[in-house]
Each structure stands twice: as structure tokens, then as C-alpha cells.
Amino acid sequence: MSWEVEMRSESETKELASGLAQKLSGGEVICLFGELGSGKTTFVQGLAEGLGISVTVVSPTFTLVREYFGRLNLFHVDAYRLNGLSAEEIHRQIGLLDYMERNGVVVIEWADLIADALPKERLDIIFEHTENGRLIRFVPRSEFYEGLVDALFRKGDE
Image 1: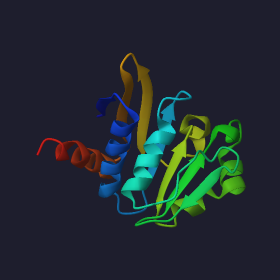
Image 2: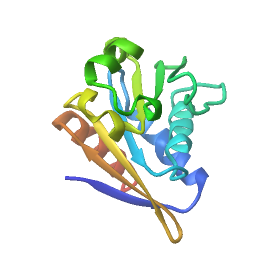
Image 3: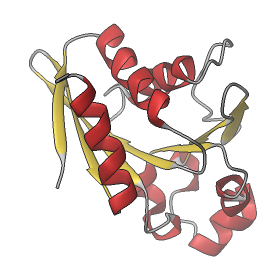
Image 4: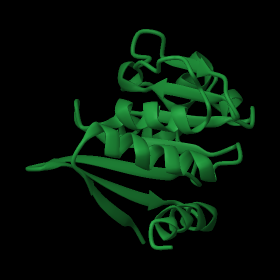
């Protein structure tokens, strides 16, 4: 099961992500997939705003992981430079498992490049360019994440 929504602006994307942040309680892993410029970092910025993080969120490309502190801690991982490493090397190099155990929210950009290191239970979010903006598809990988995404989209129907 998946949910799709088309966003026409950065502010809509941030608002959607902020809404998701309101549903998070800690321990979640969110994996972002999509081409360069498709909205992944913009989404993380909205997520951070929704978590009460007041500093500017930037792509962690050269540091691999950036930590932000708010209602829940946000661990923003950029897997672009980890491409080709084994799951064991990834966990050793950045301590991915350690971040997952710290009860914050782990968000991984370019998650497709480290597919073998990803947890089985997670929320995948796929970003695609469209003629009018971007299509964002939520693909929950467990019942927990199905409930989370369902609550996010049900909120707009109330």
C-alpha cells in the first residue's frame, strides 16, 4: 500500500513534512529516494520545523550525518558518498545502528545507495519531478508506518 500527493511548491512540501513530524514519537527511520533536486532536503527542512528545530537544515553531504535537537532529535544522513560500501562498512563508518537506537528520528537521503544497510521496518518516501512540481509517494514498510502515514493523510480529510 502507498499514498501519493503532488506538491506544487517548496512551502507545500515543507508543510506536508511538518505534518508528518507531528505524528512522530521517536525511533522512526525515514528513507528518502529521488533524483537530485527532487525535494528531499526541502522535505527534511519541513520535518525539522515540525520537530521544533530552529536552526537551518542543510544537506549533510560532506559530513555524512548532521544532528539537530528539538522535540525529538533529528539525525539527517546523506548516503550519497556511502555508495558501494557493504552494510557492515556503513554501520562501522557512520554508526547507523547507533543513531537508530537513540530514540530520535533518522532520515536517510539517497537511501537507495545503501539498501542493504536499511532496516526492514521503515518509511520510504519517493520523490519524482512532475510538470507542475513533484510527486511524493509514501511507502510504509510495516504496520506501524502504515498507521503513521494513514494518520497523516486522514488529518487532511477531517
